[in-house]
Image (cartoon, rainbow, N blue to C red; front, top):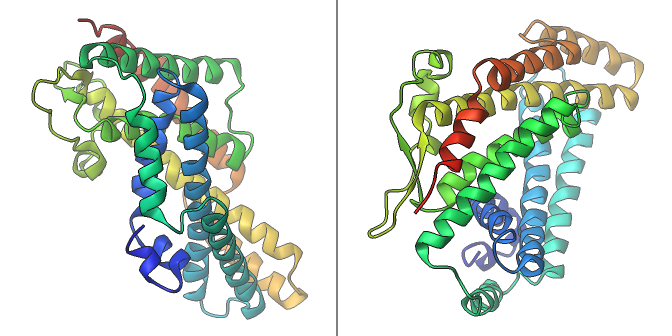
Amino acid sequence: MDKAFLDDESELSLYHSDARQVIFKLEGLCRLYKKIYDKKYFKSLQNEFKSLEDQLGKIDFYDGYWQEFSAIKDFPIQLLNSIKQDYFNELNTLKELIQTNDWKNPNQKFESIIEKIEGIEWLQDDQERLAVAKVVAKQVSKIKEKYKSGELNFNDIELGLHEFRRKIRWISIYAIALDGLIQLQKDDYNQFLKKYLTKEVLKNKFNHLPAIKKDIKPIYLSQSAFYALSWLISESGKMKDHGLKLVLIDELQKISGEDDKIVLEKLMISFSKEKPSGLNEIIDKIKFEADHFIYTDKVLDILMKDLNSVND
C-alpha cells in the first residue's frame, strides 16, 4: 500500500503489485475469525478486503483479454477498444473505492485495524487450534452438502463454476494464511489419488506451506488430499477461464458489426477446437471431475476426517 500510494496513479500501481494475493490471505483470516471471535467486526473487515480483491479481479479480467486479443491478427479494433474501455472503467472504480474506504492513508488504516484486534480477547493457542479446525471442517462439509443438494452446480460459469472454485480454494488459502498452523503429512492415499499428483501440482508454490512456528502444535492434513484439492482448483480455473472467454466473445458479438461478426465467429471456432470446447462441454467436464473428486475419491471426506480428528 505504501509503495502504491507514492505513485500518482496509485490504483494502477496497486493493481500491478502483489496486493491481491495478500488481500486474499487477509480476507481468509476474517472468514475464519468471524466464526470464532467478533462476528460483526470481522465480517465488516472481510467485506472491505473482499471489495478490494473483487475489484482487482475485474481489472485483471479485462486486462488479460485485452492483451490476449491484441495479439490476434485482424481482431476488430472497435471491439478491442471496448474491452480497453471496460479495463479503464474498472480501474477508475478501484480509484473511487480507495477513496471511499479510506485506503489512501494505509498507515492510519492499518493502525486502526491493529488497535481493534489488539482489544479482542484472543483464545489460547491450543483453544484457537481446535476452533480453527472446527470452522474449516464445517466449511468443507457445507461444500459437500451444497454440491450434493444441487445448490452448488455448474449451470452458470460465473455463479456456478466460479463459485464452486472459490469455495474449494478457500481451504488452500487458509493453509497459507494461518502461517504454519496447518501442515501436510504423508499418507497412504497417494496411490488412488495418483491422477492428482502431477508435476504441476507438486511444484505449485501454494502447496509449499509456511514452516511450523515454535511452540505451536499444528493441524495436520493429508498431503495427497491437499494436493488433490490443488489439482481441482487449477483444472476448474482453466475451465472457468475458457468459459468466460466464450461468454465475453458472445457479448462482443452483440455489439459488433457484420464484418466483425465474421471475425468473431472464426475466433469462436478456433477456440472450440480446444478441449473442452463449448460451454456445455465445459460444464460436463467439470461435473465429471467434481463428482469423481467428491464421491469416488472422497477427497473432502479425507480432509474432514483430518480436521475432525484434531484434539488437545
